[in-house]
Structures are given as C-alpha cells and as structure tokens.
Image 1 (spheres, one colour):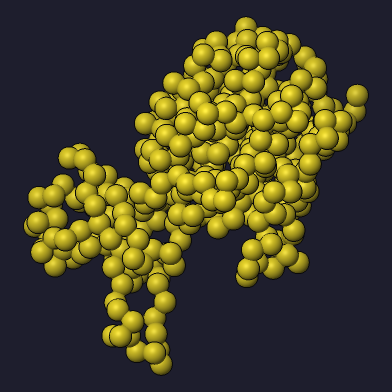
Image 2 (cartoon, helix red, strand yellow):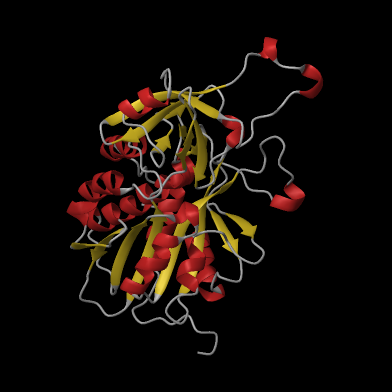
Length: 362
C-alpha cells in the first residue's frame, strides 16, 4: 500500500464536489453533509454537535479513543455596512486577505439564495501615482449592481450576510490541486480517505477511531475545543496545512523551509507530544514515506493546540500538508503530498497499540 496510488476517480469526484461547495466559518453544515455522505460506507456511526462538527466513528464500543482530525471551514467576509448609494463594506470572518479582494467576484449568501457581487476598485488611470492607496480593510467594497440602499435590501442583502469567493477546483499541470479553501478541507478529504482505506483493506483497529471534521478553526480553534470535550480522546493526530516557504517573498530564516512535493510536514512544538511525534517519524521511515520537519514557537496555531490542552492533556501531534498561497483563492498543493499524508496517518494508526499512554515515565 505504501507505494500504491491512493486517490481514485471516486475520491477525486468527492474532493471536487466538497471543495466547490461553500463552507464559511459558522455555516459549514452543507459541506459536512457532503463529507458525511462520502465517508458513511466506511464507518459505524456519526456524532455531530450543536455548531456542526461531524465525527465518523469506527469501533465506537472501544474505551481507548484515537482522533484523526481536520477542519471544514473556509475564510469569508460579513456585510458590515451598506452605503446610501448601495455599496457594501465588509469585515472578516476568519483571516480573509484584503489585498487580494479588488476585482474578485463574490457570492453573498441570503435567505433568497446567492446574490452576485464584485469587489470594485478605481481604475489605474484615476489613481494618484504619487500617493497611491493599497487595498485595506476600510477601503475595499462590494458592488452588487444596486442603485441605492433600498434596492440592496430588496435583493435580500443585509448586515450580517456572509460572503464567499466562488472560485472552483482545478488541476494544474496534472499533479497540483488548486482551489480556495484547500485550507483545510484537504484535511477533511485526507482523513476520509484514511477511513476508506481501513475499510477496503479490512484493517481492524484495537481502539475506537474518531474521524473528526471540526468547524470554526479559522476563528480560534473553536470547533475542536468543543468536540474534544465530547469525545474525550486518548490520542489526537491533527492534519492541517502549512506554508510552502520556497515561494517568493517568504523569509526562510523566520518561516523555516518546507515545500510542496517534498512530503508531509511533521511539527515540533510544545503542544506536540514528543513520544507520539517520534512514533509518526518512525512510521514514516519504516514505510519509506518522505517527510519534512517544521518548528513552531509557543503554539502550532492549529487544532492540535485545542486537543493537546483539553481533558487534562491529550497526546497530540500535527502532520501538515505544504501549501502555496494560503488564504487566497488559488491555494495550491501537490497530489503526491496529499497521498503521502494519507499514507502516513494510515500507517501510524496501524502502529498504535490499545491503551498506549505515550508517557515519558513508563
């Protein structure tokens, strides 16, 4: 299995459908339904919570519980202010990048359905080159073609409507996946593929596996914070994305060196339990899975932190997928890395024993 192709036609079809569906923070449920429908044949039961986190469970009767986790939300905007002449000003819902906004199409989600709009920007001919303004949160705006505030309201748009980008999934040069929201619906895809492989290869784990697709990571790890209290796991292996620092304008001296195509990235951080991380590294080496290393400072900034510091402490580790152009509409990952993250999680699960504490004092 270590060298075999993993992503097949059916899983690629699921990935495209899953990515193209909008799942902004706080509004993830339609994407979760797509995810649950795909993974259903490979698991025993589901757990869901009030805010939309979905957990697919294998062997739910087992007392020892292992989580593999990704998060399902994507960055977006909220309508914050409507001008008298019908233009919309916005605030962030997650880490949306104001600099990429001008000239982008947007979907505004209303009770009446999607209303299309564009982030407008003054033409180059009209700007003062001596003191040219760059895009900022207080000067970007959306035009939905309305003549005034009253027409905006008639179209069903109001303060609080959530706004997403409509950019769709593409494959670049045969082996690069490109889309908005690869951060981190790729995580949901990869953990679902792990569940599929366990089922298809007839692997029986000696513990309960909780395949967890959390919500609201982009605004502070909130979904993981909630669901870990419900599951109360013994071990958590989290997957998220990290930066390809070989792209222009990134300082490798401060950000480290990780790149797409070179394998999963295994993190070193206070929240990462050292013995669990070493088990993952040993698994990668034993199965000839390429990997990279990354060091964080005080925290990983991922759901790893939420799991690690919950329930009196949960042995947690982070396996990241290197990605280019994070928080843009053209996030890019390498197919080989996607398959190798899946392999690494799968093989690590086969290398965990029932009841392991990963204690430093055993």
